[in-house]
Length: 89
Image (cartoon, rainbow, N blue to C red; front, side, top):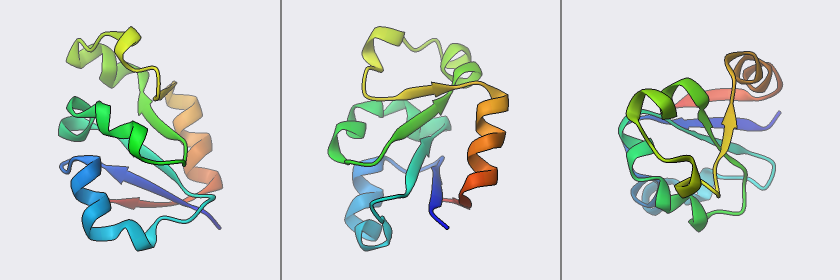
C-alpha cells in the first residue's frame, strides 16, 4: 500500500534531504501546519501534494499561490487515509 506522508513541522525540501529514499512513486504528501507555510517546496516532487482546505483558510493563504497543491475537504482526507498508510512527520 502506498504511503501518505503527512508533513507538519518540517519544510518539504528539508524532509526530502533527509528522507527522499522513502518516497515512492505512488506515495502522496500532505502539508500541514508550518510545512504548509513553505508550500513553494511542493514543486520539488513528482508525487501529488495535498493540503486541507480548512487549514489553508485558517492560515489565510492565497489560493492562487497554491497551484501545485491539491486542496482536500475533510471527507477527501479521510478517503486518502483509507487508501494509503499514513505516516506523520
